[in-house]
Amino acid sequence: MRILIINFNREFANALEKKTFNAFSGYMEVDYYGPGYSTTHELNNGLKAYIGSRNPYDALIMPISFLISCLDEKSIRYMYNLHRDYLSSFSVICASRYSRRILDDFLDITNEVKMIFTGDIDTVKMRDSVHHMLKKLLDCGFYVLGVGHELTPIVDENRDIKFFGGFPLTNHNYNLAREYYHRWISLPSTAATDDELFFGNLENRSYDWVVPGSLESSYPERMRVLSLLKKSGYRIWDNFTDRALYQKISRKARWKYTNYNNSRDRILNTILNSSKMYIPNNVKREEIARYRESYQECLRASKCAYADGGTAKCIVLKYFEIPAKGTVMLGDYVCGLDKLGFTPGVHMIEASSENIIEESKKIFADPDKMQQVASNGRKLVIEKHTYRQRALDFKNALTTIKNGKFFGSRWEAGEFIIEPKV
Image (tube, rainbow, N blue to C red; front, side, top):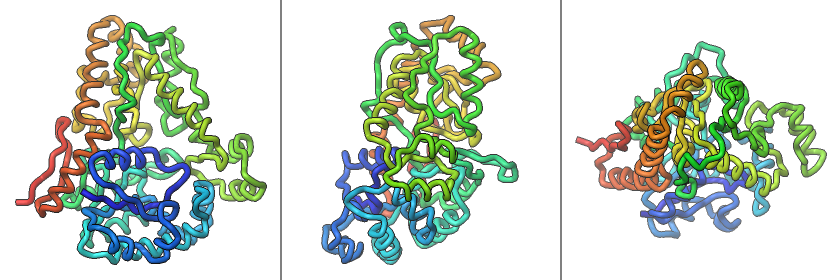
């Protein structure tokens, strides 16, 4: 099968997006079109001409981040985001010049399976403008590749709760996924890569506990759990190179930590004061690599790790990364974990700051059960939740679409189920 992905080639591309599409390339022929991928000649000729000059594609996929950038193309913040994520092979002007034309061509193309990939945004904070655009596209026959309604928590939109980056919570993804179930491929962009798997037994690990990830306000339970574990005398892995590398969002942090390319960038960033996660212009690849390796090391070296979905109570990557390392996962049993096959007491231990010490004592008092839970969690991830398996599930869904028999998809007890059209 042949897939065309329409996107910017960014220096700091969304990691989940990259892992998803890289996995696709192992089972399908994957091409890319857009600024940073295509030549100036190809961009000038347009998307329609590019597709017409090649063998037919089975699907055209556009990440929702590209769609959002086109909606915001007149925004100074959009221009700045392109600038900070630049790749030397194309400029901000080039990206802005071609993005709207690419979108117009994409919308105008007929007789092709067209999809929007929503895995590069948090489903619980979908903006109103994005919701309206997605609804229009679904009405026009588009498909969505992303988290389905059965994996999406229902939030109270009237409560003043902000999630990662300061965005309000919404039920837009849940409502769209239910209404357009027949056009929704329910595949999370969260999973484990094969190189993240680790088979070292728990007995030989040096640390009892680790609480990985950000400790900022969207994840208040993590700080509470970490504090309780420290007071209880456990050996805790806490050698992260920089927990806040991806969350330097305050004005003070930007001035303090960022090595700007020039004074203009510093001034512009300070003026915008964007309330979203921030990657400095000039972060070195080596710094990011050190951060990622320290994260992987903490899971390999620890017997237990805590996971939670933050104030949004949603599934995050840690629910797959922790068991992939053969580490015992204790944490919040958030919406959708049962659908993905996770059973408390079998693949993980359900826990919060209210009972974390009690549950920790129980599991450490029974080393055999501890190892069994860790092994069960890893086995589930290997069988159902690697990016390789996501790619195979997507290929099966796309084949069903091409055969005219697709009528939606869902997860049930760890199985990805494609509903046939009757």
